[in-house]
Amino acid sequence: MVQKRFYNIEELSTILGKSIAAIHGHLARKQFDAVPPPMKLGRRLAWLVESVEAWINGKAAQSAEQVEEYKKLMPIQALNRRRGRPTKAEVKARNGQSQALNRRRGRPTKAETKARNGQSQALNRRRGRPTKAETKARNGQ
Image (cartoon, rainbow, N blue to C red; front, side, top):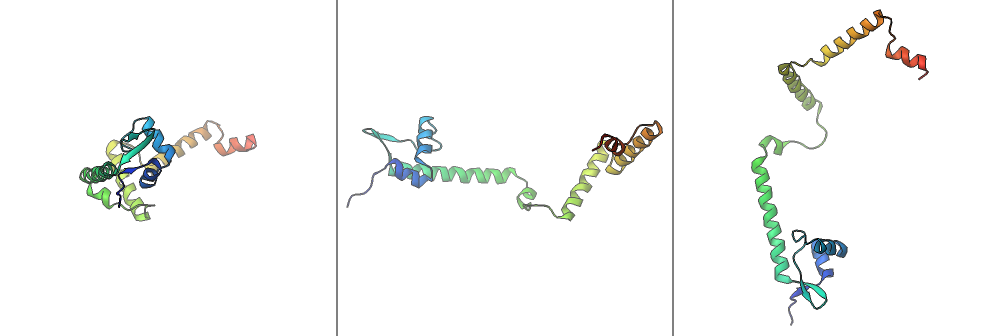
């Protein structure tokens, strides 16, 4: 029984889960991090079975190293963070933290900003300037 020694491009595309055109594109750009380096058999491209398996194992090891490095760099809270939309309690807690930061930075709270905007509206009324609603009504919007 003869053992298979080479993969052709069709077989490589099924192994890697890429189209033949994508493999040709990677080879034309010499992106050998995306596709293992080929060898020529006459006019055809071929890949040694052992070299493809070694390349795939190398990529898997590299990926595992990156995951471990990422876990070391990320704080534990970020790893335990839930995905999706936050609950109301999480939003309130986060807003409380941001309000405390804003107070430390000397920024006004939302209530203070609303009060200030109300004061400016009152000044505009005293000066005879129309409100936004009156302006829209006058313009027919």
